[in-house]
Length: 418
Image (tube, rainbow, N blue to C red; front, side):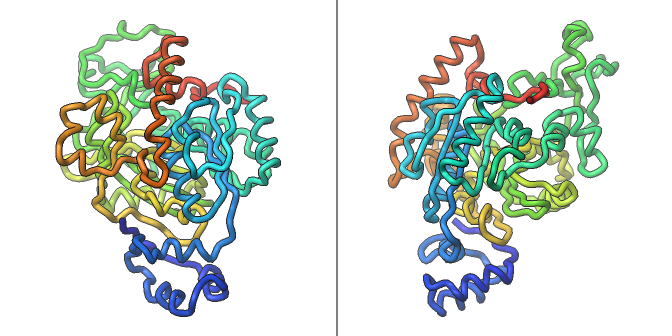
């Protein structure tokens, strides 16, 4: 696994030079490696940077998500104490040996007051220094972040709203990013060309309700639903997904991948690294303009001319975090800009086996690194069936689809948060 570290800060070098943990030779190797590719096989330059930093206590929520497990392992590997929390009980990260304590929280969507109080108590009890929300609980955390006495890795709630709403993303940011023409469904009139548009709810995830390439009439949608949907001009091309980490407008990490295989129409389960400089430049300028803090992600289409079009924004964590892998902890805590620079592919192998069983046995898929299994931390892999069992219970109890059941208790769909 290789990463590019594009810059460093003098304070970090000073810390390195005065650290009793490092020899002069090691510091000299670090200085020689400025703007060079960092190898993370031992001895690791990522380890070198983090060795000079004091241990932190990290709170990660959204423990149901594989990227939360990825984050936990990265921080634990660097000697930090990791606390994980979620409103689900049997998440895959719960069983990880990287986790010092697991806490079940009230649902942020349905019990916002209790959710905030539980987090305040947890942060004080454990002396949390950094709080990283990973899934859509990030919106609820953002709305209450002034109450939390630690570094919260998310931006202002009003900003997150404009990014999350698929209509407002176009109206508010079309001057900063190339976004396909997007309009509210209640003002859409070109129904005869409906196959040239993509229809989706203003608040949605995993493309569960997205309609693409179909002849539609105004009667397809009830009038009461039209204000809550958008029609977006369809762009043909290759889809890539962007993951980035920011701190007050400074980019900390960046990765991009092509979701070659998916769970249904939306969520990727096989991650093929992509390098596209124009997209990186657009994302860098955008996050800097917003003075963004936290995880900032996008779905992008590269058209026939290799030009990027930004379809939507996810101001939370997404699967691109897997491509950063060991670099996640230093991306949050150390100086520098970490870019995934390896051709290594990653996959959620159990999902591939269930959803794409014939592809699962292909050489291409078998060569991908599973994002859940680790020989040093095997329980999340062997006990992930418990997570599936809990999601199955939620699916049948609330009459949801499988994907809807994974986020139903943490979703944010524009409601007022108090």
